[in-house]
Amino acid sequence: MKGFTVWLTGLSGSGKTTIARKLQEQFLTMGYRAELLDGDEVRRNLSPDLGFSKEDREIHARRVVYISKLLARNGIISIVSLISPYRAFRAYAREELKDFVEVYVKCSIDTCIKRDPKGLYRKALNGEIQDMTGIQDPYEEPVNPEITVDTDRQSVDECVDTILTRLNQLGYINTLIEERSNAKQGKE
Image 1: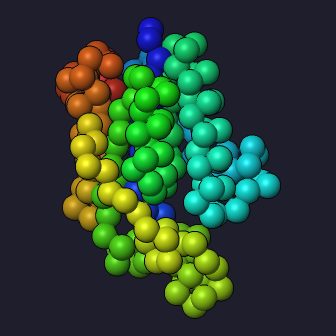
Image 2: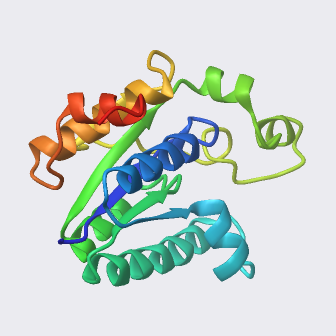
């Protein structure tokens, strides 16, 4: 099997990691080899020396691109869950990775602030942290992502089904929605 990268981009709290975990679970259930590269986990293990300035974010994201390239080269689906707020950097990732599918995890800033799973928006709004994407630092929405899911309107399962359906249409995977539904229900 040929490896490729599914790159989930969106604001903090938009649901990227939740969708990525469920997507990985579905890939594994379908017999694909898939690894999740969550931005927070990669930062904790490979980039603890970096902050959140634009330059540091780009260095961190370049490390993720490199790992994704290694995984894809070895026939593994790389699922990247990374805010990656700048269009120029996502264009760099697309160029470097070739088999790259950008998934925009769309969610209103108001919903992200309400969710605030890590308390980052509260801290940013109180001035306790700087460079928070969507508050003090911009998030540049993708112009032409291959896939857009809207977590204000879609459930996690609907988002995953949207991604898998589009990956099938693009020729990256070969599966039918009915087969996935049966697998979810434990049918043969």
